Image (cartoon, rainbow, N blue to C red):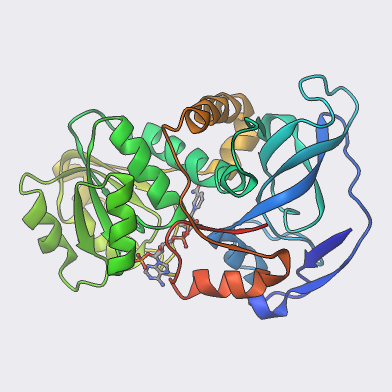
Length: 321
Ligand SMILES: NC(=O)c1ccc[n+]([C@@H]2O[C@H](COP(=O)([O-])OP(=O)(O)OC[C@H]3O[C@@H](n4cnc5c(N)ncnc54)[C@H](OP(=O)(O)O)[C@@H]3O)[C@@H](O)[C@H]2O)c1
């Protein structure tokens, strides 16, 4: 099969397209013939060797796919060959075939196009988990960093489903349009040097929840407008800067900082994610959520697609199909 291989730690241009043997589905796993795969920010970290896990070189990156099941491993009864599915995998997605463990395989309705199905598992899975970790309630104000990104757009849609008031932080006017189309109530610029004042201008009483996939200045600025009993959910550090904090700040305002990890939750509590993905797939079929696809590119364009993500030129998800 064809596969993109990471043979040395580095950037998108160092990935190599080549051939390798088909993977073997083990106990409780299925083989998926990939029709489309989502291009993720975390892939940039993974291939650079700066991610929380470092697979042994060489490896195939790629964490979310859509396609059809072509083989099932021993003990698999929940899915049959031919089923249309999406899946979250540790890596291996940028290939013609990939194997996935059952709890991370999601049944997808025939009516959903493959690129939409591929843009769905990571963004909505992470967003749903993050909002649950925050305990976001109706009427609360949530500030979402990287709001026009793949995880950000999913956060906006799911926060609106919870009847929250959404302040979307985005980098340019094209991204502003995307965030508004997802349902954001207010927009602030991520390029502003006075982000906390801009947030205060639109929600004068302060903020209940911050969803932070960015770190760095976004964390520091948004924390200044978090009110009594507010919660920050730390999702990632797209800025490349991991912030630190003096804990007395949390004590005096009775606040919490909460980590949220999709990958580790799949390992430690696979039933939780499996249940959430089934529910999210129903919402996808019913048209209650809609993954934003910025570009659909051929499989051979992976390095260019990753470079666009690195350059902050993507609103929603790029999909290879
Ligand atoms: N913890 C989890 O379970 C989990 C799961 C999935 C993803 N993540 C993390 O969440 C983050 C977002 O993922 P994604 O797939 O949504 O990525 P994405 O689509 O590329 O969106 C990331 C957003 O971050 C902003 N950004 C990018 N580079 C930046 C920089 N150098 N400085 C400041 N802002 C920057 C951009 O927003 P603007 O240009 O509009 O400001 C961009 O839209 C990543 O860090 C990823 O690793 C975490």
